[in-house]
Length: 582
Image (tube, rainbow, N blue to C red; front, side, top):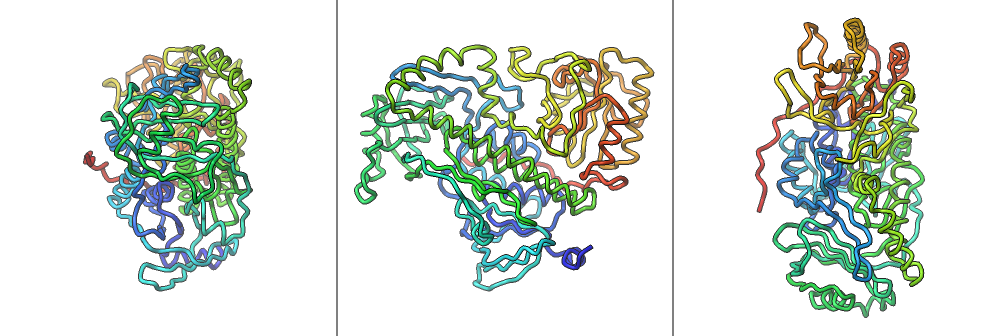
């Protein structure tokens, strides 16, 4: 062990310094608090956000919030958006229904950023954590073995500290990124827009977001904040934008005039959280520099169309937190941390590409291209398959780590019959799930019937090994799987094994079983022929195959699993009662 890390462990000093206490830094802090990893969370601002900022929480983010213990409170505090519509020249050219999502959260949750932060702060404090407000990073030196940093505290004092890892979640103007001398290359779209929370009277639905397109003046978008006529309003500035000193004031009259000029029949009043912004996309060339990890706006920004960026950052924190905890506890080798950039960088690039494409398509100005778009969209988006895939693409469930060195897929077409996952009533909308993808969620059963637990909440801080018996299960197959489960758990205490059976009858064996009497789990994983499936602590599938020796070889080679070492324990006090502010 190097001297720096030895001194950190010996003194029980913070192992991680988190710079930035927005939703992403707070997610990281909650997870580290749960895993028992010492950290400090600093934020240069005097308190949490007070304006709406990011608004949309997608299904994948709510999955994560469920693990953190705040999903129910988020759903109670927010407003469910179940539909999304794009209208051009008075006609709907695209519509999709979030209700088709194969998820515990088949909707987009409209929740202003201050509320998301409030829930995360409440959870962090409940678990014993705290935030150091008015505290900022001044210098940092990454030694390769750790980070030496200086911070200026709320009292004006300078404090030097040593940590093993530093998390940059300090936004688009990231101090960490600047101190590292990292480039943040990209471009402006030359698109400017005004935002406000507003009371709107119109004939629209309160569970639907609407995007009104105009090839001459720019777009208008509305997203409901509640069911009482309160909306988040986005209005693109005219393309012939005046100089900054001649731009209109952000008043209800200004918003009303621009909307009236684009044919939108709505009455706008009572504005708050007004701001003006511009579209741009920028990125760093990597999301890790030695022992510094960048996430959220500190490493990538893009067009707000699609509402991806805060959700992306929260998923980045969730991806990294369990890995830091495993390495800190000695459960995993330090090389596991290389997978953060390997897994999350391609996801960020994919999200940027999607947002960039959508922005270009939805802000077309050429009359010929506008007519082509308006003719094409209804024709390609009305089929059942596309209708099922559209909300899935927005939800965050589509992002995968199939090319990660930390996953292995050995299940062939001959090994299984195609089941179904996703798409609600639409069958076989998606290809069968593969290793590297998010495990399909499903309610679980007990011998007494259906359980309130769901599959994505099964593992907690551990790996979950699902041993599917398949449709041709015999007593000998079941016995073999029970023995395999015992062998795996004996060698790898951080793996929790479950034999998935087609019966509610419990087995007289110490190994856990998952009843699957309706074949829901077998079908969602498309493994009616039986399979061995390893689900990681973050809900992604690490291994999928049928060969027992291949599974054991994979486990032995895994950087995330040191034989004989258990997973770090998770601190989880009961989730607080729902006390949602009106």
